[in-house]
Amino acid sequence: MSWQESDLLFTTRHGTPIEPRNFNRSWDRRCEKAGVPKITVHDGRRSCASLLAELNVHPSVIMRILRHANIRVTMEIYTEISDEETRKALQQLSESLDF
Image (cartoon, rainbow, N blue to C red):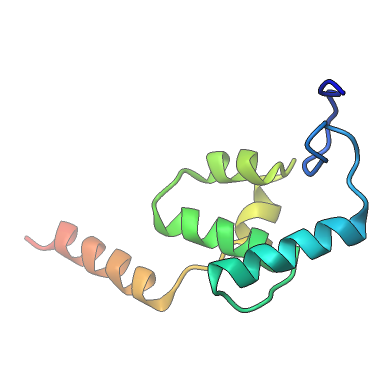
């Protein structure tokens, strides 16, 4: 069977739609293999957005990776910035203003 092109984010190895229960089983196995607590796919997307933000990836790039149509969804709903990152940004600001 050859690859079937689609706009789907998750597919079978042939590009066809994946049955949701099969996807969930695969997702759970990957969480177990990675040694991380079982989380939802949505939580995985939020973690991805937050990690990319902490790596200073441009918000537009994060938006494209998550395939959002609106930057506001990406930054206000999916992305969380840690307290440490906030403190680091404020320290950088302070140092840049220090005369």
